[in-house]
Image (cartoon, rainbow, N blue to C red; front, side, top):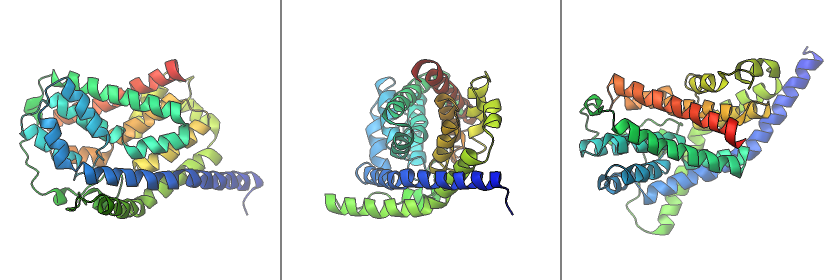
Length: 317
């Protein structure tokens, strides 16, 4: 028989799980629809064509913006990235696209809005887009072009790997029809398919978040990630990658950490580190980058997580 204290903690965890479900499930379905609709009107080949004409500078801004509406998976980000590099686009421009794709997207934006409100969401988008632009400009000046593999992505379906589950919907591509109604209908079907594929990750993330909220002692969390620990933000950015489930599973954990008093900047550093340097991401990018450039990418994402976290903790919240 469970002790009264444990029973109370589990009941609190269950209530928090339901709270997360009520907030996140409708938002996730809506965000999935927006992502699918964006892919209908802006498929990877169109994104690549738009970016090929840009030079460094304005190209980094455009690349970050288009990366934000391109879901990170093997049938969108990787072919666009490969096409840009094969066409001779500046490496820094390609990196601005690459950095923005996993960190800023409709799913992240809407779920962040539902969990943390409009102010934090707007600042998150501004800071991560700015970081993607500046990061791309810096990497473009480091002379790392020789560390790009000579790989041609011929068959997008062969790259059916998504970093947030739902590889099939990620690789569905745009429909051949040009009517708005058919594109909306297709986007709705793909959104539902993506949601059903990703539900296990979402449920797992909500379960972990609920246990953090109801069972794990607050003192333990604050010992590692509390503001009294000067290394909390770097630790959070580094810890995100090995515990990454998916973006949909990561944000419920982030919400629980925030509700337990962990500073929002530390929480966002955790999300950025996980979303950008997860094992699925690195596996995908290993097809394009040699080891040194892969380390540069990972180090850049962790640095972005730390900088965004510090800015939030010291200047915004």
